[in-house]
Length: 120
Image 1 (cartoon, rainbow, N blue to C red):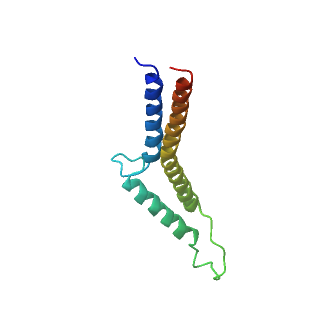
Image 2: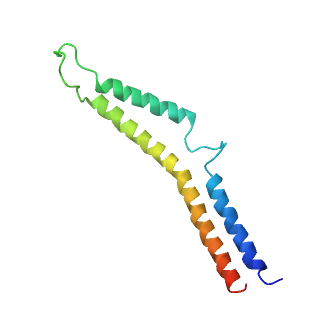
């Protein structure tokens, strides 16, 4: 094998990892961590929480009463918070993977440059 072939191959692999990290989040992916059904359920829960948070008892209301915090509203908020946590996890998963590819690409490319510097 000619001198420097290994280091060039390592640099190419590192550069491919770097490029893949930039394109990882672009485009449509067939598998998604967050489905349409989950998105609809999350939006519906948000609407229910919003509606319940402004609901007042008409028999006891003077018009200026603050909204009541009922057990039903607390349960809806709890469900919505759990759904929001799932959404945040789905959003951050792809970013984390792209960041790992980026760091790995930098390390492998730097290793190829160092190997070339020392004549491998």
